[in-house]
Image 1 (cartoon, rainbow, N blue to C red):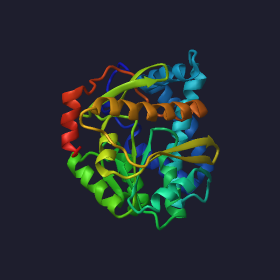
Image 2 (cartoon, rainbow, N blue to C red):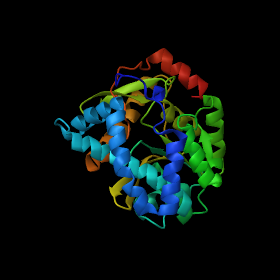
Image 3 (cartoon, one colour):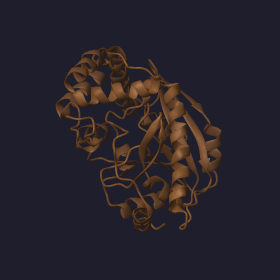
Image 4 (cartoon, rainbow, N blue to C red):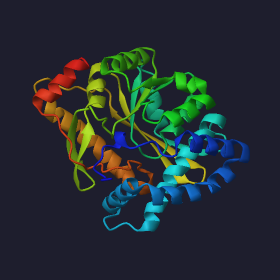
Length: 318
């Protein structure tokens, strides 16, 4: 299968049996035993998931500026598997088994104190799940996560079984745009943190291209249209996995209020996406094995010109 296949068409890795088996080993055998299982799992995916292996190799070549070795691809897959395993422990035991360092948390607190809610824009980098540690430290700070529950049904079932309260806080991204926007608006009205990933477009989304790791890459416009509609502060969030049991949560204020004028919608979107892509690229260079888009991210994709962008904007109230 070509790496140009859209990421949504790829099947969930492992299936229900494999994921629940890892859950049983991890929770009953402990994190050390669970991590030992990562080595055969990594090798299995390296050998059996050709499109993902090729996409990893291509991405790492861009990140390092030279051809990637098989060992580097294995390390990339292992890093991804480690963060998936840690999601189980983060939900089952909170941050107790981990060392989670934070940077910029005081700046996030300042935006939350405004009482308007905050949009947290992350990426498929490291562990967005580590963000839930902030919920334990700041119980007065409700967290809602925009997540496509239909893309990984086995993993979703597992996480909701481990932490039903967490599942109840998910805004399902598989819903229509209006429903998602209304749910996000309600959460912001309640002063919540609303977290979503802004680096990957779904099959039906309109995208715009910007420079990223040396080439033009497509990014979704919907996060920025939603930010304009909701008129709440936007903070970037990066949850980097540092190896072992160490994570680092980084919060960077992006904008206190996103404004996208109707007459210059395209250039305004381009400027916002370019700023986001620059920060994403920065942290890729900080922790290159942390970025987990195992498909051809730079593939040809339809982009939003004026009429297309305008139509999307109308649907979310811009």
